[in-house]
Length: 105
Image (cartoon, rainbow, N blue to C red; front, top):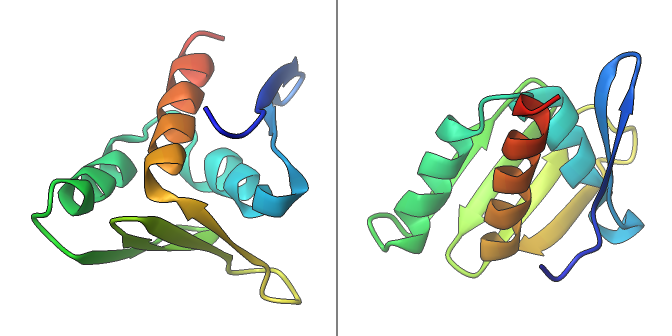
């Protein structure tokens, strides 16, 4: 995995720490994905397999603009409209790891 990701269990559940350059990823995981990453992973797979060239989805906290090479994650509630660009395959790996971790606490 390209990014250093760490997890910490606390009294509210599982917390994820990501590099500041991809900080919206943490908001996506803890706010939108929680324990079921399937809908998000399905859209990513659709684009990676070439079934679609672009998918967009909006959760409670974030919007994803998924393309084959990169995905833009937008924090919908940030005052500065915080966003990041991450490689789509890396985002998929992070989501899959999160789902494993969150379902094992």
